[in-house]
Length: 126
Image (spheres, helix red, strand yellow):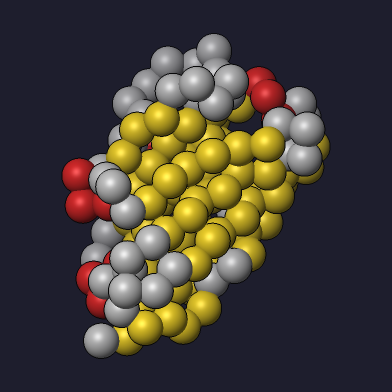
């Protein structure tokens, strides 16, 4: 089992920045690929960014490329999402997710992830 706890959400004006954190506990953190998803009100949960167990490989949905950066600190069992140049359309609940690195699956699909945090709300005002 892996327990995930997100933090860092809040209210920010358009153009501002936030840094989300996801603290993991339980099994060896560096055995897991990590990702961030988001869910806007009334919409489905969508992929935002992912990072491999080593931190070497990252992936982003097109709408956040150049604005968001995913990173991880395996010594601290934490994954981060630095969000810059925020837009109102970034408003959503952001979820951290984990999947065992040796298990295959679509990085962009929520079905590939076995462990989820409770979410942290991000609101971007115009």
